[in-house]
Length: 139
Image (cartoon, rainbow, N blue to C red; front, side, top):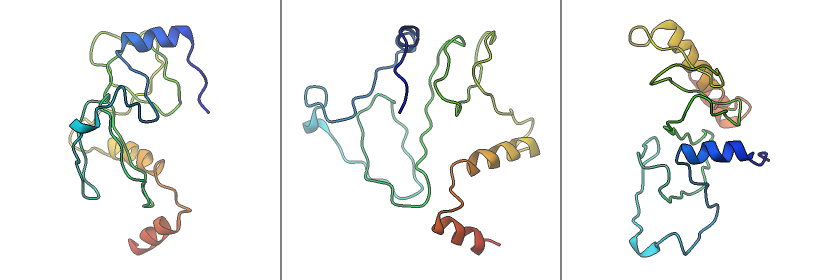
């Protein structure tokens, strides 16, 4: 269970323009008549604003459903989990709160591929029977 945010974290979240999520349908905020269905094939992705109200069916596969979120915030903002990464796009980071992965020097260099493969392994459960079968079949 995540810890409640401190007053400082709430202030930083407001600076970043973050709106705290509504975990259930709030008929006052979501207008169903304007909703549209966007059905994706497995392996496809969608790009949309992170505050767009959206939902999806349960993921019954052995792979995690991965979301990538781009948020711009000041470097003094502290992440709330260890699984975090950031790329500095302006100024300098005087705080060092965020992890940064390697920047490829050319294409997919060896260091970048190692980082990517380690990251991907953190999203796959090797004890899952489907993953074990896929791994064995690929050898």
